[in-house]
Amino acid sequence: ERERLRVHNVSGALLAGAGLDYERAQSYQFLVEANDGGTRKPGIDHALQVTESVRVDVVDVNDAPRAPRNVTTFEPRENLAPGTEVGCVLVSDDDVNRSAPLLQTQRLSFQLTAEHAVFEMDAGSGCLRLRADGVLDFEASEYGATWTSDGGLVGASHTLQYVATDDGAPPLASAAATIRVNVQDEADTTVDAALIAPTDRATGEADDPRLP
Image 1 (cartoon, helix red, strand yellow):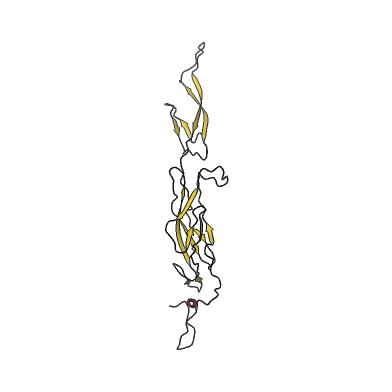
Image 2 (cartoon, one colour):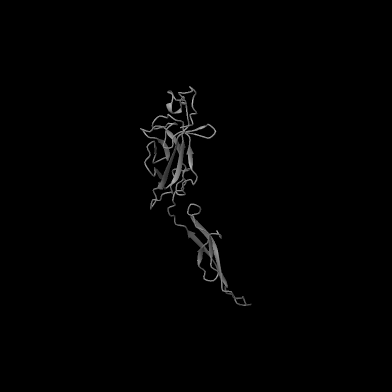
């Protein structure tokens, strides 16, 4: 309590030290002693100091949700059915008590900052899922499948941003946070022509599929 509240030793003004946080403590109660700096004299029976009990009630204000600063990564396999959930984001809010839902006073809503051709976000849960017309393909995306210098193949990757907004007064939104979806390969039922090595007609030998 002394770190958060203090009394000025001359004016008696009550000052806030560290920030007051309603979610940490709703009230503070302590004793304040005041004296006139005088000296007791023999035979004089009057108080040179007084002690009072003081109570400070903290008023709650809305806190903005806090989204992760680091990129949230999901790694679903390709060819998932439309509507399949690929992962959920975790956002904290001091006004939202997820461990005791009956006690919470606010709820969060989630949305992507821009419409995406493949994914959509559930507004209530913050879970990312495939759109009804969304196709998750390892070999085709906004970045596509690419060969690495050591001959490995890096598949589709999608980058999205989202915000979380509470229903407080006034409603407050988190800073935009980033999701990266790295699509994982699985055996296709048909041969992918893009990954077949072309044949050199002069020699009959297969060309390096990594070369254009």
